[in-house]
Image 1 (cartoon, rainbow, N blue to C red):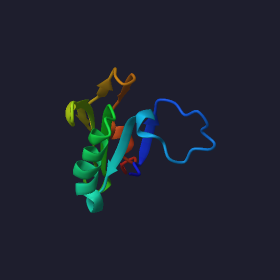
Image 2: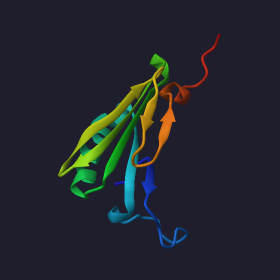
Image 3: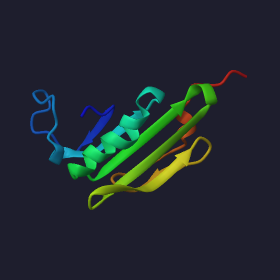
Image 4: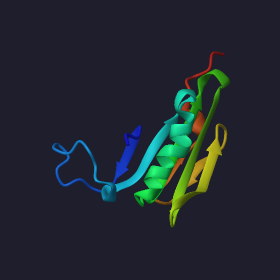
Length: 113
């Protein structure tokens, strides 16, 4: 699997490893796109849950609709459950797996005045 972004626990030799062992992955991040919606929302989370990766994040940015949303999921035995969600104009705030706070609107390009 090739996530768009991967948060890792640690890498012994970061200059050497191209593939990260699943036990070192803390959280894959997928930027959901219209062409890969099923893969990003169903297939990839299922693969990550089967590999026992503790967290999974989805980010969706729709520039044409001036909309963005961020979701964090945590592993619950063999599947993910949503633990945080926020859309543009509200705060996405989490403490785990690390503190993070931002408005998903910041992911959108500036709008003309």
